[in-house]
Image (cartoon, rainbow, N blue to C red; front, side, top):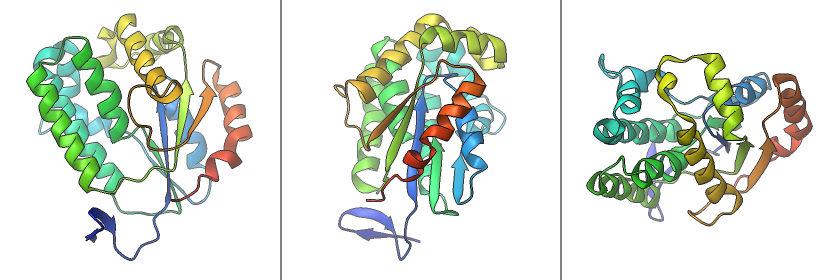
Amino acid sequence: MLSPSQGKLVRNGEERPSVICIEGNIASGKTTCLEYFSKTNNIEVLTEPVSKWRNVRGHNPLGLMYQDPTRWGITLQTYVQLTMLDRHLSQISAPIRMMERSIFSAKYIFVENLYRSGKMPEVDFAVLSEWFEWITTNISLPVDLIVYLQTTPETCYERLRQRCREEEKVIPMEYLESIHQLYEDWLIKQTSFKVPAPVLVIPADHDIQQMLQQYEENKERILAAQRT
């Protein structure tokens, strides 16, 4: 049950888990990171609901957005905002929750990129922004740590070519560069938008074995994220 408390909707009578968000560009290695930590006791891993974005009653808004972002950007991002909110508020099942991205990066990175690139009309951006501001003002969405997998756009582009997901075949290098810059401004320079939690930066241009070693080395620090 959710109940009002001091202007926020919070879980009533439950000790909430530590919430850790794994952030990074497309193909930055988030899946590998989540798979590594999913093998640790007392961690609940929530991946991005990509299957939902690919199939909304038989429609594929993710694929449509990549094909024609000006027409379908608002459609996809409205649904992304809803499904990510659902992820944040879903039933707790472990002391530590690790999420792939967040409602914050959905807005600060992907909606912002559509708007700045001229592919989202100002009215669409205004509507999404109003929704986001209402949500974050009225609903408690605590985050205790952001793990930023910092990659170069070149590395991400090469990984995209290797994994060959259907919707991603049309993603150009310029798109990855734009997403990278927005992440850097948000989480490294911290000059664009409010950062909702401390940030741990992990260089992620390395191969899988080196990345697994980095996760092992940073494991205690990551899992020690303090509940607020």
